[in-house]
Image (cartoon, rainbow, N blue to C red):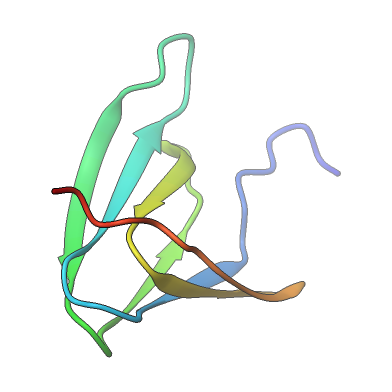
Length: 79
């Protein structure tokens, strides 16, 4: 893998319930939230790791599709 590799693959996130939150986290010495999206059931978001995004957090029930296959998050709704 190249030293400057920042990701070229896209990740598809499909909300399985209303109110799924997607949070982008920054790269660098201090990891911080830099972007959030809220999806309702059936909505899809296509995301990619970039020079600014090192991690993506998903809160809620969603299907995540990527080049290795797919997985389902099992987040619980906040009360």
